[in-house]
Amino acid sequence: MTGAARERGIGRGIALCLADEGWDVAINDVGAEDEAAELVAELRAIGRRAVFVPADVSDRAAVDAMISTVESELGPLDVVCSNAGIADWQRFLDVTEESFDRLVAVNLTGAFNVCQAAAAAMVATGRPGRIVVTSSVHVQMPFAEMSVYGATKGGLKGLVETMAIELAPQIRCPVIGFFGNQDTNPTPADVDDYQAALEKAGVKHEFHRYDGAGHAFQSFNNPERYREDASEDAWLRVLAFFQEHLKDR
Image (tube, rainbow, N blue to C red; front, side):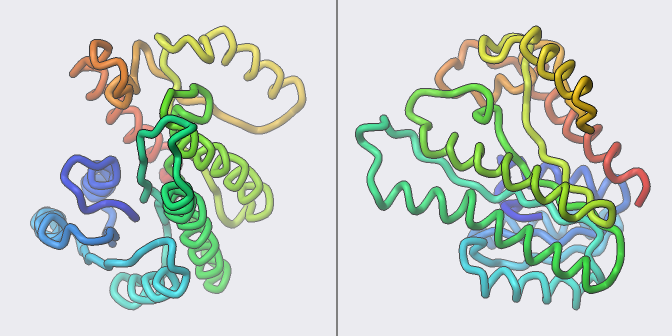
């Protein structure tokens, strides 16, 4: 589980959900050693095997070493969650080359590194597996001052769709994103139309929808839309997503 150490992160929440469902978990992050140690202790306290493997996902050699360490510590990979990501809030005309390169390196190159290394390890063992990638509402819903972040998440969509085709049936590759019924782009009707088009074309797919603004806690430029119950619902939906895709494992 990459990007999993920090207390307020999505990755940490998913790691805890997986452990609650009986999975042993390797967590990854850059820095945050104290938070990582606390999470490992929490996972072990509920009877799970857990390790912290620090690595910069933008560094391919570090990712390869991380995969090797996880397999040595916990055994062959069953599920790999590529979740590590960063964001900068900058107006388009103010985006620097340094900022652009940093976001692409972590969000897109880093995800590629993790996914390819994990897939290679799974293929080598011949075991079925899952590679789950955390995307974002930004794939469908553009936000001001998030142009590069949104572009990296759009790139992830294309990457994972192709992975799913090439790696099937041994490895399933779901991607987590968020739709909300309070979104203005796309609307629920837009999603219905898109789903109907996919079904007509015979394209296998699935949407995980929310009643209400399930992702509103991520909408930093609309704090008045934040709701505690919506945030809790979002986590429950993420857990349900994992239960669906891991139920055969």
